[in-house]
Image 1 (cartoon, rainbow, N blue to C red):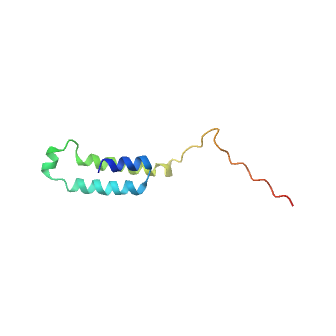
Image 2: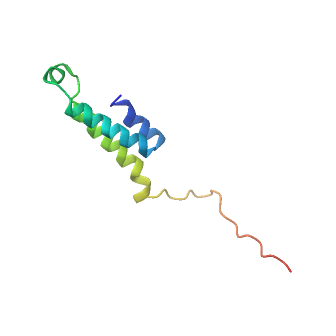
Image 3: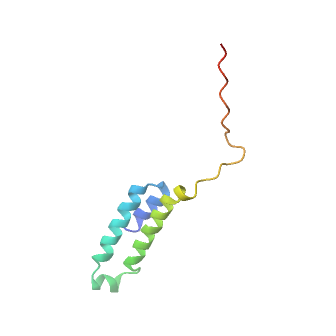
Length: 83
Protein backbone atom coordinates (compact mmCIF):
# COMPACT_ATOMS: atom_id res chain seq x y z
CA UNK A 1 0.00 0.00 0.00
CA UNK A 2 2.75 2.47 0.87
CA UNK A 3 4.31 2.06 -2.58
CA UNK A 4 1.06 1.94 -4.57
CA UNK A 5 -0.69 4.98 -3.15
CA UNK A 6 2.00 7.50 -4.17
CA UNK A 7 1.85 6.17 -7.72
CA UNK A 8 -1.93 6.57 -7.72
CA UNK A 9 -1.54 10.14 -6.46
CA UNK A 10 0.94 10.96 -9.23
CA UNK A 11 -1.23 9.37 -11.91
CA UNK A 12 -4.47 11.07 -10.88
CA UNK A 13 -2.80 14.25 -9.54
CA UNK A 14 -5.08 13.94 -6.51
CA UNK A 15 -3.64 15.80 -3.53
CA UNK A 16 -5.76 13.98 -0.97
CA UNK A 17 -4.39 10.61 -2.07
CA UNK A 18 -0.90 12.09 -1.88
CA UNK A 19 -1.36 13.24 1.71
CA UNK A 20 -2.89 9.91 2.73
CA UNK A 21 0.05 8.12 1.09
CA UNK A 22 2.49 10.33 2.99
CA UNK A 23 0.84 9.74 6.37
CA UNK A 24 0.51 6.01 5.72
CA UNK A 25 4.13 5.59 4.66
CA UNK A 26 5.36 7.71 7.57
CA UNK A 27 3.43 5.52 10.01
CA UNK A 28 4.78 2.35 8.45
CA UNK A 29 8.34 3.72 8.62
CA UNK A 30 8.00 4.72 12.28
CA UNK A 31 6.38 1.38 13.16
CA UNK A 32 9.03 -0.72 11.45
CA UNK A 33 10.56 -3.40 13.66
CA UNK A 34 14.15 -4.60 13.66
CA UNK A 35 13.09 -7.89 12.06
CA UNK A 36 11.31 -6.05 9.24
CA UNK A 37 14.43 -3.96 8.66
CA UNK A 38 16.49 -7.13 8.18
CA UNK A 39 14.09 -8.92 5.84
CA UNK A 40 12.77 -6.01 3.77
CA UNK A 41 14.10 -5.64 0.24
CA UNK A 42 13.72 -1.86 0.27
CA UNK A 43 14.00 0.37 3.33
CA UNK A 44 10.84 1.99 4.64
CA UNK A 45 12.20 5.49 4.25
CA UNK A 46 12.12 4.95 0.48
CA UNK A 47 8.31 4.82 0.62
CA UNK A 48 8.35 8.11 2.54
CA UNK A 49 10.54 9.67 -0.15
CA UNK A 50 8.25 8.28 -2.85
CA UNK A 51 5.21 9.81 -1.17
CA UNK A 52 6.99 13.16 -0.82
CA UNK A 53 7.73 13.01 -4.54
CA UNK A 54 4.06 12.28 -5.18
CA UNK A 55 3.11 15.38 -3.18
CA UNK A 56 5.59 17.44 -5.17
CA UNK A 57 4.08 16.19 -8.44
CA UNK A 58 0.53 16.96 -7.34
CA UNK A 59 1.45 20.51 -6.27
CA UNK A 60 3.70 21.19 -9.27
CA UNK A 61 0.99 22.83 -11.46
CA UNK A 62 0.57 25.56 -8.83
CA UNK A 63 4.18 26.67 -9.17
CA UNK A 64 4.73 25.80 -12.85
CA UNK A 65 1.44 26.23 -14.72
CA UNK A 66 1.17 24.29 -17.99
CA UNK A 67 2.03 26.20 -21.14
CA UNK A 68 -0.74 26.73 -23.71
CA UNK A 69 -0.42 24.45 -26.71
CA UNK A 70 0.09 26.10 -30.10
CA UNK A 71 -2.86 25.60 -32.40
CA UNK A 72 -5.11 24.82 -29.47
CA UNK A 73 -8.51 26.32 -28.93
CA UNK A 74 -8.24 30.09 -28.80
CA UNK A 75 -10.95 31.98 -27.03
CA UNK A 76 -12.73 34.20 -29.55
CA UNK A 77 -14.26 37.41 -28.26
CA UNK A 78 -18.00 37.42 -27.99
CA UNK A 79 -19.81 39.57 -30.53
CA UNK A 80 -21.04 42.93 -29.36
CA UNK A 81 -24.81 43.11 -28.94
CA UNK A 82 -26.62 45.15 -31.56
CA UNK A 83 -29.41 47.55 -30.48
